[in-house]
Length: 248
Image 1 (cartoon, rainbow, N blue to C red):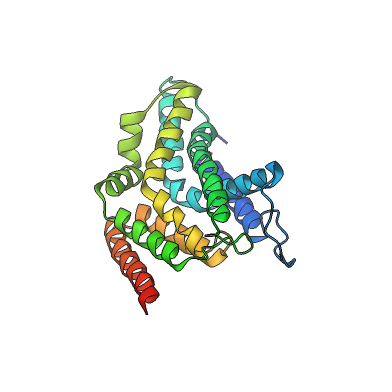
Image 2: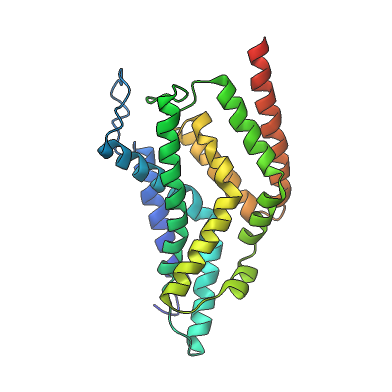
């Protein structure tokens, strides 16, 4: 089992991604087939359900692009363990990574409540009801795709070797810290793109899969950083066209 740790980690990642994706695609605990004629009241139970939905969605969307880093950590962990260093389960590292996205999910839940209270977000489709907001979200995401901060974080996400060699910490706390730091880099890389879920629909499977594929290609494809520039330009043009439609 130890010799095949990468295979075990890969199978575990695939299982978690499949479970999280299935939960989202089947409605995330919501009855999507029932007609919702009245907005959902934001009770504590409903807010918790929305938080779980967001966090599960982030797991399904972000774990595929984080898999190379997690697998590399498993390899490095085996190497240092063979040299007498403390054994650190890869799951602790992955848990730290997901904690960072849990923080984002909490913020996204609050933002969803705020937008719904302003009448800018439909509680039924969970998507923007305002053309101006949709255009602003597209342009903001496009501009951020071109910023130095975006590409500094993307460079960290694309370099598992550099991250492990510069950020390595021993022990369980060290692994948790490393996972959280890597999660923050990925968060810095992708948080504005995730805001586009409010435009395309928080529960829209095509939008979810499209954004997840873009993030995966950015982090894994040889020319991923150029894809960020291209997608940024496209999003800006899309947002400008949407805002221009208001004047017609």
